[in-house]
Length: 192
Image 1 (tube, rainbow, N blue to C red):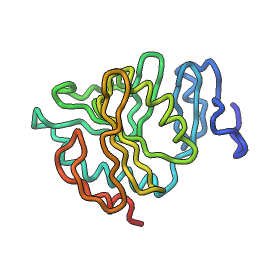
Image 2 (spheres, rainbow, N blue to C red):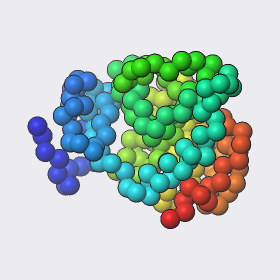
Image 3 (spheres, rainbow, N blue to C red):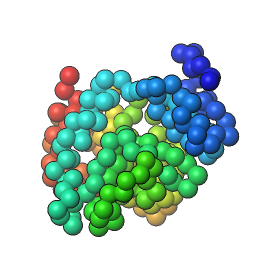
Image 4 (cartoon, rainbow, N blue to C red):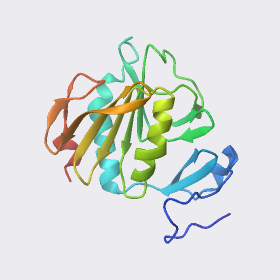
């Protein structure tokens, strides 16, 4: 097994021409994704990243309602297949109308309706670059970027084949953000 060193360039693949089984070769506690045939592996996110994503999930949890056709299925770090790519967004959501029953699988094949990526120094280039392109190609209608360093959320809406910035919400804003309609308290996301 290849050993990861701290001097490894973050934009270099862990393994080129990877297969699904190669995901099992990365160290415990790392997250692996296969993008355009190459395996990328990253250490677990920093605590401020995890805290912000966890708190965002907590504020959105009211939408995760299995009794309502207007509800959502909201998952933390699901493994999702987008064609030949295997991605692991920080948060993803499917409208109940598209996922009325939750499948008992490891890898979902149904593209989400909404994705949120928490930006960290080691992954922002990939989240804003190739992963964003893959999400757009597969029709993910809403893409959010949560940046705990800047204390802001960028909200993108799919417009044809690419995303357009719909809103940037920062610091202590209290606002509703598409596709959800209740107010999110951003100050709670960034509180340390």
